[in-house]
Length: 129
Length: 283
Image (cartoon, rainbow over all chains, first blue to last red; front, side, top):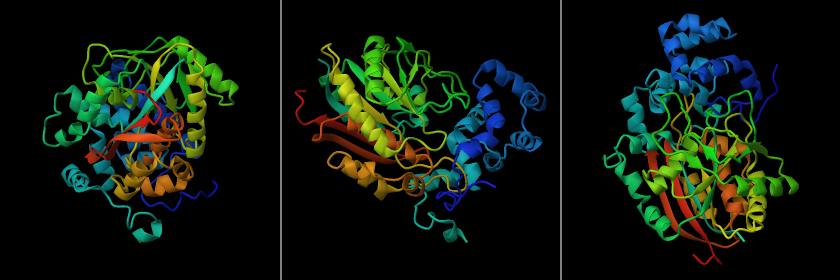
């Protein structure tokens, strides 16, 4: 049981605090390893084999293989570490953000060009019900 | 003695760096953004710094989860651009000022800011995109840069109040350096944005505009903003704005806003930019 936080009631948002960092440590360190061309090549050659180098949970490995970004965040992933993974795939932050919001990249880009997601109605979980 | 004559604030969105590096700055999407920095590119030629103390955050490039310093001062002679997953940006190495940085580190620690001293550190888009926005694409950066990296990746970052106070200590450190250097302090990151989860894409224009209007005349009120307010109102990554308060703390109580720019969007982010001149500075 983890302590309650004042940010727990922000909808659609996972704050990467010390507890999340503990849960996601090896998932994020796997992503960090993709900072070198050699490791990126090894990962692309055999993703499952490469992931075995890191003491991650099977659920974390499956989320990586499936590129399920929200699930990776739920399992302790942090967006700046996950960025190494989607960059290895040749994708941008905007691609990843669109994936996490369930929009197409074009729909998401249009929302941003129109001024972004307003905070009105998006401050509290109770507003999303 | 070293003198601080101005501060600069700017967002440091990675897609801006990509647009510069790929020659896309005149495309319709990007042109309005780069237009907002044209004044600055002229101003900096007329008011050139010897040294920039550049406050930014590392994005899991130099620091992984192995080591998470809240404040880290770059004390090396050189900092190379980081490989952030797609190869290093094609920008020059950043030249530090090791002697000045050592003085600043000693002054800050004795002033009770227990920062981390870093002698080897790759610098990512958080530091190089602001340099590119202001200086363009030179063969060499035209001045020395002392990086001050602030943790905003693992929650909690330092409070706005702590950052403002650090800025004031930074000012004492800089002006006590005996060499006659002209120094700027830059605060980077922000403005409102959220990169993660189903709420990604959050932009809060009233919050950002209030921040831009208030940081010059009344930084004390911004230093009181609690973390929960940044998270809820400005998005989970908008909390980077605490770094602007380090810049502001290093300036005079009275400053002149000589340039103000706000633009939505750059990729996922609201872009804010200010130049603040010390009211008493002879620039």
